[in-house]
Amino acid sequence: MLMTTTGLIGMLHKLELTPTAINVLSVMFERSEPGGVVDMNQADIDAVLGVGQASMSRAMSLLVDRGLVLRSGNGRGHRYALNPAIAGYSSEAEMQKEMTQQLATGGPPPILVPEYQKRPPKAGSGGLHAVA
Image (tube, rainbow, N blue to C red; front, side, top):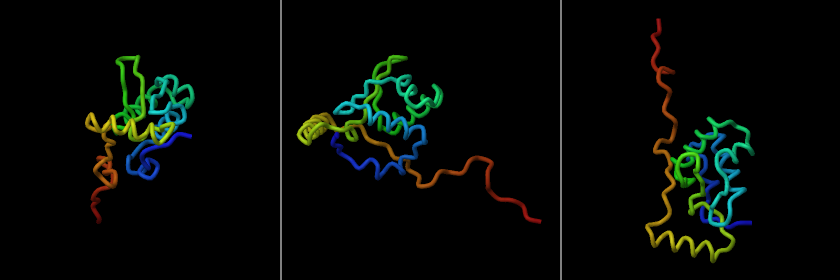
C-alpha cells in the first residue's frame, strides 16, 4: 500500500470533478507507481473504463486543469503522472525525499479548487418570471 501526503478524498467534493474524471483519477491511483508515474495514456485508461474518447479527453483535461494530473509529451504521445502532492510513495522516507526535492524547486504544482461554492446557474434557466 502506498503512503500519500494529502487528504485528497476529504477535499474531492470541492474540486467539482465530473463522475468520469473521478473514475479516471481512481484508475490512475490504482495503476500508479510510487511517486505518481502512470504508465498509461488516455486510450489505455479508456480501455479500462469504456467511456469513449471524447469523455475521456474532457475528464483528463479537467484533471490537468485542476492540477491533480501532470501531462508530459505532445500530441498523441502524452504521458501522465499524478501531482507529487497527491501521489503515493513506497515509504515515508521516499515521500519526504520527494517533497524536499519539490520544495527546493518551488514546491509541487498547485491543486486548483474552483473559487465558487455553488455552481452558477445556467444561462436562461430559472431567473425572474412575470406573475399575472
